[in-house]
Length: 370
Image (cartoon, rainbow, N blue to C red; front, side):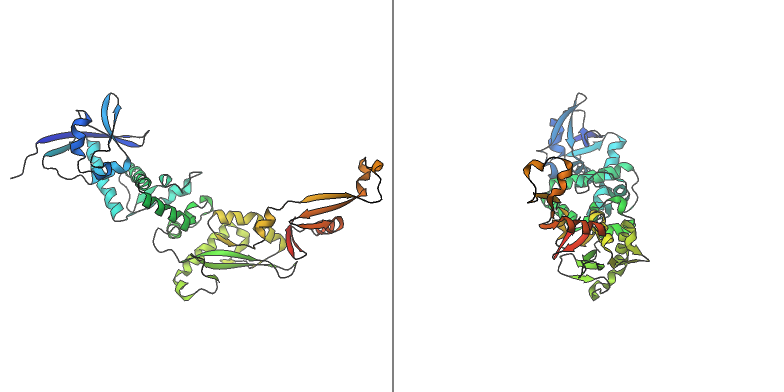
């Protein structure tokens, strides 16, 4: 014979889009039923940390997306209290919560590739801006919304999980890449951000090598870089343990071709660049590739000369008298010097470089950019 509950509590729940939370209420004040209803609920510390607010003249219990999920999905049977749902929406929340909870427990969910592609300035480095889908189609749009907010809420409440999320962002920069530069499909994207658990132990990058002599071609190598930077090898010398990922390498090369079309052709990347092409690669294309999460190995001196500024110095010629300084016609009476990155050029040397119409040049053993 079943034991009859001593008390029946009828609850209603509504979703507040404005505050992004749930409001749980009954016909009586929350203080009369909340301690019993939440006595088992760990996320509210067994009912001691619930928030009661007044909404439209009635007292309600405010639940965050994660608190509501755990409440509806894991509600136990209590012998002395029977909980009933007042309306169809509240009853539906219990069904949806159990579906979401099962998806989370069995890891049957994934980041929303379409939402990532459509985003504009929303940073995915913050978990609350990430949208999550179930592996099966959600029967109602609110399930997707609830799942996404609950996961973000969960991550924000748990410092350990929050650290894990930041490690994911650091390890898989593709999740922060500009969406307009990603032309591969969803499976490739999920692999690159590490969601499928099959991400290669390396990433495909580019290494630019300066020519041995000024005026020679620059070398652009497609390389495979171990995730811990312990190994860097040319892409055509794939280590045996990395060979199962040849399709991933091909997709990465295709993606680089899409970002910088003039670098590729027929599934291969160019391996030689002229001075002008090297300048274009360093000054413009390297920024696009880096933003897309592509690893670049550039010459050590590039960071210094990129920030270098031209400066002009003038010294009065010894034969010129002070009274003759004034007037534009006297400019030729100065000895002019141009300096950049610690190198000083005479007017004649600078004019000769300008005549060559080159942006990168090696002078006195150092590279300078003009």
